[in-house]
Length: 427
Image 1 (cartoon, rainbow, N blue to C red):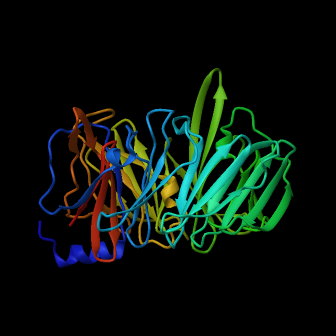
Image 2: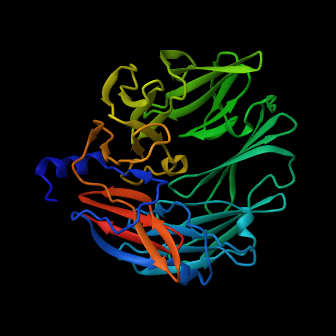
Image 3: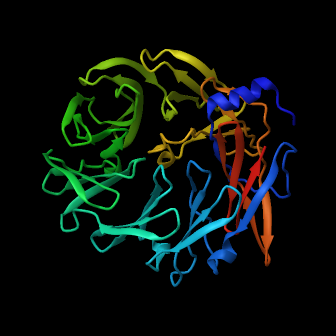
């Protein structure tokens, strides 16, 4: 497919990554002519044992792809692999722990220079391995709080390699730390938050890092702290309301608040989209339908509105300063939208955004259809998405239907992966 000058310009300015995961199995190699294979790597052969499908990859600014290969057997180790932009395997780092099937591994992240940070738990301790761009161990350290009685913990890796950590304790306090990429503590703050686990609430949503902020949820209000643990403001919310937040360039918060009311064994949900300024006051508020979600795609704020009766989900882009609609996308079929949240964190050093859309003929329907959108306009690009590809090896058949579309400068490519291989296609 030959691309027009307009579409090339759109790609360059939009800086798009679209993540699309399609659960349906499609057999056969159906690759549009616009896409050409750059390389493929046999990750099962590299690991030396059967693996689950690799983790969602991280991609550094030079195009290096980092993936975790988790073993199927508890007797095997997990491996971390760096694949260069030309498909050459740069290095493989083996986890020091077995039994990775049981998720001893917490997470891993990269910084702007391409250093990898591997987190894993050992008893009550959280251990970090910093792996350099050459695949060698640069630092190994234990994060603070190993001896504390914790309700929950949050770790945030910044693009410059510095680390933020927050611990919510059973005592009601919150501890906030700042660390270097070598694990040296450079800042500490103890907050007497009277933090409690709210009855019936999902504790995983009670304390989160949002941009530069630490957001701590209580039953009647939300406290927002800066990177050093100083309180910026308090926002008084509605009873039984829980928020999902994103941060704007000028450090205001935009969030969807969901209120759950229980009566006679039934639960009803109401939602609103709210902009909160740095004084904790509401700038504007919009009523939403049940099940709405909010996405910040490189400072393009987009939310969903679902018409369940007709099986349609609209995407609406807003001006964050006013809440007014600036663009919309309404498919002819049911639209399922998801987002990979960790891929939205700490990626200000990359020219990308993430959005996942799938159009179905109805709820649970078949015949899914993909589309690539420019997040600044919510218009479809003319490039045809890559269909699922089936790979076979030793009578094992797996579908390459997990994809990450990447737009960097004037180059667009897609990374596909399954339990057998990682493949890159390029326009």
